[in-house]
Length: 192
Image (tube, rainbow, N blue to C red; front, side, top):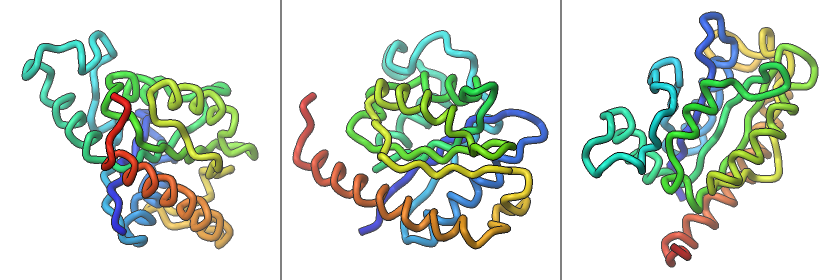
């Protein structure tokens, strides 16, 4: 069954290595027969959160928020690609996430994290789990941490290590299971 995934990437730094990982994830989703849309905070340039999408009168939200709301409502799951900035998530990622709420409900999320060091961003991932649960898109149990992001992938997003492809396959098997199960449950109705 084909699923529709939205990939959220939240670094806006000029020299960002994590975009390689976001591209790898996008290619992997497509290779597995699913639809993928990469939402890159550096390209979307959302304003700092003043009002959530739901706080605008119908039809008055900025066009970028209208577009993202529609995209999110059509998604079967979210893949969040996060670097680790001072043991936390990038501020642009938090801003990207916080503009919406109901659009995420009853859809799983999966955390792909990275860092320049050996821990692969797992400290940021722990913070991100709490945020994603609060937003109504709880994360699947597995993480996909990528250490040494500067050398892990080529600029085009191809892995430099065969290990990454192997662990990614198992990660996606789990995400697909959750996304399919929740898609089926959403089709039968939600609590609200």
